Length: 193
Length: 177
Image (cartoon, rainbow over all chains, first blue to last red; front, side, top):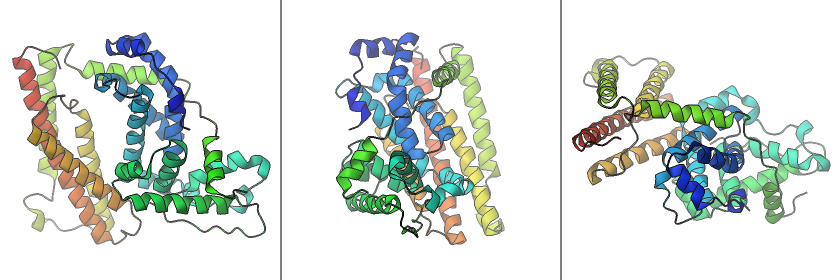
């Protein structure tokens, strides 16, 4: 389940951060930077972009901490800011331009990259990165972060069946890529979105 | 290897967490300081006036320079890609202006909020359309970018009006933003 659910931030710390205490800001950063960065990296892939978005998320949350009303988990609130930021980036036309600059991310896995069982986690990471951005976000949000199809559909401004079909296609594709290699790869390039 | 979806989902959940950059906190701190120094709490009214003047000048330059406005029919269309390139640059400039505007006020007029939401949602829809590879015909791409620039331009206008109104209200009530 999502790492965010394992993080509890003391309400007193949040209160201190609200008062502008720098040490409290830093403690919040230390508690949440890793899950936020992981989430963003899994969605946007590129480390440089992820670092920039990480910074944006923390600036937004520390400047707007008054907007947190205390009704739900603070970490969950931070996660929603991070997801929104990352998806905004993926929707941005600049993101598509960046894809052209990294053709390796638009290509399917090569035979050399797939797969020996002992290297499975790395292969899975690589395969995930090769999924089209929107599809990858659906997979990560559903499988790891525990979002429902309804929530994902709302985030993408699409239908529930869009989310379901993206997930099913992605699972099929990942399984095909990660099949033990027997001669020719059965994978074909997927449509970028 | 993965016989069912549950197994695959489990493997995804077990992927290791990734380490954030070593100097991530310093970068956040610097960004926070930059924002703070942009805020009026320091040099108050003078800064606000300077910011408003700067924004007005920027908007003026953007509006005067835009070839798709009043004399749209008279501007010869550039070759498809160059025109799209030009619209993308314009769009980037407008986004830069938008980023420089103060944060949205916590309390605002309902009409303004609805207008902003609507514009943002339409821009988002266009972005989705632009990110679909099937939208390949250069004329259609150009039309979408043209619409995006117009919507961005409207959004900057509405946000600017909102910021100016809020700034006046704050000044009148003797508070800091």
